[in-house]
Image (cartoon, rainbow, N blue to C red; front, side, top):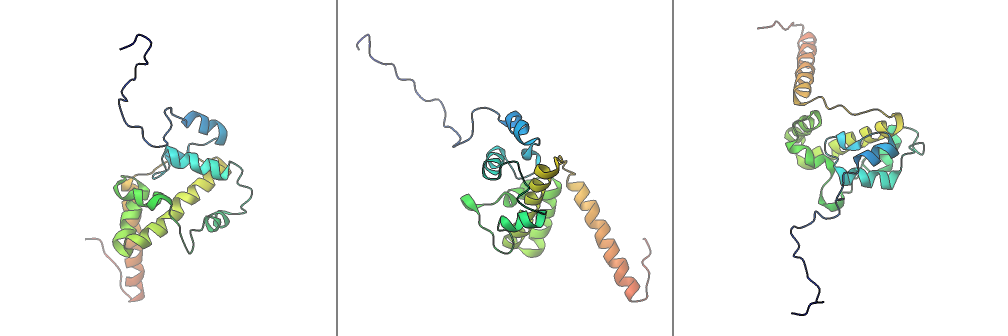
Length: 168
């Protein structure tokens, strides 16, 4: 082996696609004023893509409904890469994850993904427009709210039949 021959180093690990080798969270927060990765189902690369596509000026859309419509969520949805951020919520121990699982049990997976894709889009709009931070409320908050909703529905049905519910 010659003295001036190049020494090749063996690659130690496989990279993770296009994921950056540093944490760009601070830079994203500096540019947009909010951290989109706090929304369940939105990871680093999704947040980067959102800011690259939309920028931080949301004045182009008059309302949240205009923004969601522009994204193509109602009535059709297109998914890049085979899944939307909504479908990643199935294992999430969060408010959005619990809501997705509830919808999936009632409607089936395709309709639940379509219904839930709207929620992260609305959160992105609110965060970029108003600078609001997303604070996840957890699975228990969804279950408590769902139980209250079901109780109110049962009380309404009982009242319609001339009855009154009594706690056991």
